Length: 279
Image (cartoon, rainbow, N blue to C red; front, side):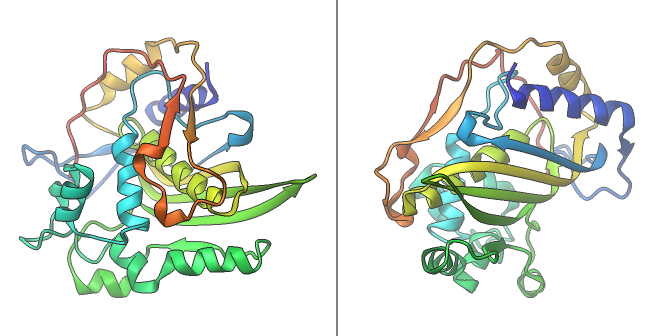
């Protein structure tokens, strides 16, 4: 059992046993019914990537390629365009959150990155002084929220820190989410931000260190309890999955592509479980 498998089962058990039900919930299922959830607050996990601990479960298949493309769309293209996401990356699931008929998700995610020139500033800070303690990406922009409609960012803050251990330099990252779907999005979000961490580390020729993951509201939707019980019954496979980035050290952050990533030694339990999307 991997560390991620253990954490997944512990979180499911905690939510089912200790969680409370949402009230005045915003999300709805595609049939129009309110998507209530059972949730706990203040959940934290730590993975040492340098020791092979990756936040991806083996208890069901986790499709991360589209998630990595989403990261490129947000932090490389710095875009909110659904047309770009479809044409360049062949990713369509964000269409559910289109604002009106604008073919965008509103002033969210990549639009905020571009507005504040965040990636240029982060890379410049790390180049000028890797030891600074101000490497913060925040997508929580009230001005942008007031400008347009759109889903407020769930994974809204990422922080980066550098450590020297003997002759090696490690890049650590902390992801903060206001809200996270334990069964559907948890490992997808974690792995896509590990990919972002790896991209920045490669840009400077550093090693990836630790990944810290804090979630304010961790929930299971009320139509997913059967799938939750199934995950508790499943026994993990013997694989030890890890994400690899096959580009030379020093490769420019903006030149890294989705196909440069490879998920190695990943043999998850099947069949895949089905989940109705809460929108």
